[in-house]
Image 1 (cartoon, one colour):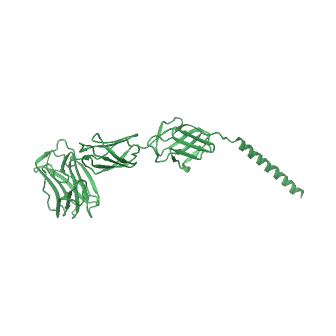
Image 2 (cartoon, rainbow, N blue to C red):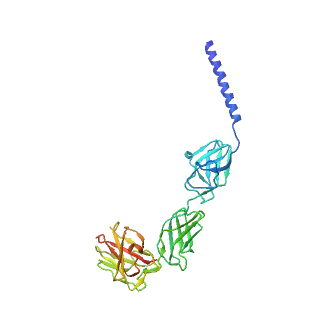
Amino acid sequence: MSMLRKYMGVSFVLLTFLIISACKKDQTEDTTPPTLSEVTNLTNRATPLQAIGYGEWIIIKGTHLSSTFKVDFNGTLAADSLTYAEDNSITVKIPNNLVDPINNPITVSTKYGTATLNFKIMQPGPQIADFNPGAGVADDIITIEGNYFKGLTGVTINGVAATIISSTQTEIKVKVPTGVTYGLIVVTTPVGSVTATKTFGLKYVIYDDALRNAWTNTSYSTNSLDLASTLNVRRGTTSINVSHKAFSAVRFRLVAKLTMAGYSTIKISIFGGLGTQGKKVRISSSNNSVTSGTYDIVLNEGKWTDYQVPLINIGNPAIIEYLTFQEISGFASPMFIDDVGFY
């Protein structure tokens, strides 16, 4: 019994010591609110950054940060699993998508307060994936698809400002400016500008709702050909509806011949009908006495595709009398054609 009392006495003393130690620890815990001073990256931790991009790893420096439980980038929270806090720094990965294209203040919350650091976290520069339709006239609506369009400040076509109808991070709708029929599309945000890889419109028209500029139809061997079909149009009111036989061709002729000075590219829009996926159409030209080279384009079934073929790909002809689009896969195929010409 005396031994039991002895052990109980020792246990009581030990428990009392632990309680007193815990109380002392609580009394000395740092309860000072946090402060934030600068941001660096992980490779050069000594040099403060003025700005950084979405999705990057950073170190936020300051004081009293060890109890951090939340890092907020202008309303978007960093993932808990990607946040590591110490007393004088927080290592954190910026989310891949933030509210503002540039100004995204950082707010850190600890057990004892919050602190905010105004800092520029910038979205990537704008990216254009495509635009549709590929041609148009004044007041037509063009849809530009891509990414990082937040904070959009302007869109130009051939250097002329286009009226912006709507914009999101991934899509812009604009009106074609008066007097603009062709040219490069440029999108600008606070981060920078990007130019579309394909050119809008036609500098010279062969077909848009009808044959233009004295061009005539000299197509051959097709099952059927309708130059004024309303079944499926790229834009406007009509398109060319052709039912090919194997190796038949849609061909246009300008008797007076067209001098190609000032033009660099053939444009054509084609909607591939049933069974056309991966099938090919061969483009060629001639001035009747001299035939150019050829270039093959690959069809996409069930959608309109805008093709731009540099003239150098068909031998860079100086004069064109015939422009030919021939089915060369040996397949009876239906398709629609619209917006044919040069720029």
